[in-house]
Length: 454
Image (tube, rainbow, N blue to C red; front, top):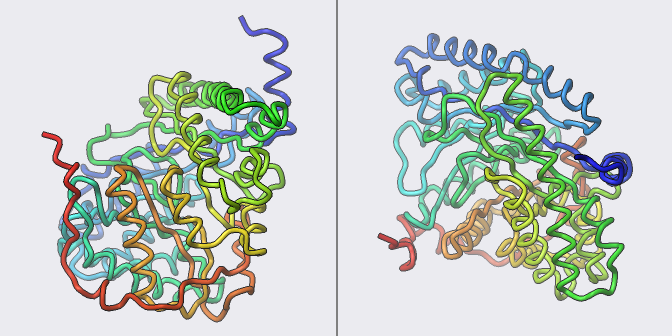
């Protein structure tokens, strides 16, 4: 029985605290599309996506309207394209044709992003993997809605440093290819350690090969809801603080569970997971940095910030798993700088640095995310940043990621403008000392000793 109090509480969350279903993402397997003929492959991919996801946007909008909770994004993720295109694609340009097909399919069904232009190279690269990676700058420059992700390491296999070094170059080339729009291509490119197969959030979503043919995954978010709840227990003990976050996360996850099951029923597609990730937006009041401030920090980045984020991430997970039997994806707290207005402000005044953000990634649910850096940062330094983040994920058995944007033609203090949910921010400084001799060594960093679980 739903009580009147709960109705009013949900209304407040939506109308004043920015509660929303951030994304309904349909995961689609393309394994049955594999074909040695590139034209036939592209046609099969287009047909399968536009058939299975034909009503995704329509259903998402209907559910949001009926329940009064906005569904911000409707998206699709597909099987990593390096696997799907391996038989047909002989050169990087062949993969670009698949990227264009994905973009056309995304436009046809009306989703704002399609993920899965991906390769899993944490232990080594096939010819197809390398061709896809080398195609990324052109693919992201000539498409609007395609997102790319590359897995470079895992706790089980270690870190593929050849791929890490290559990705430093690819990030710079992608920035150059999209420099007329503040290098926005890099906002659609992320590298991972320990990526989940069922992540509904972009740019890192792909449909894992162990997943069903088609599933519905829902990402729900509500930083403003958590911030408002914490404002009511200001000055209370850590026990009260933790309990408040956990109870709030439970309520938010229940909304996601409801939407996921309803979307699954209407689309005739199995329900996958609910991902409760506190994902900020540039909107005022929808900020992780504001939560950290409410917990007692003058600004995000002040001493104590990492501890506060650890509390937040842990209690969100605890509340989420009590609300749904199928919590998955990333589930925790995101710290994308340009997408969080209060975090961007903290970075601009110097309270939040790249090094502090790296420390925060040890306890958040992803990694260095949406950070604008000077356009003249060497590719080897970007590879070094990636290597550091992959090491944190590998050793701590968690997902970590890097999505940095070297903005060509701009330096520290200049602003990068990406628009929409991607936001804007001042460009942050990067340590000026080099690491080329390290990242150019080649080979693999072995898996840590605690990876041997058998």
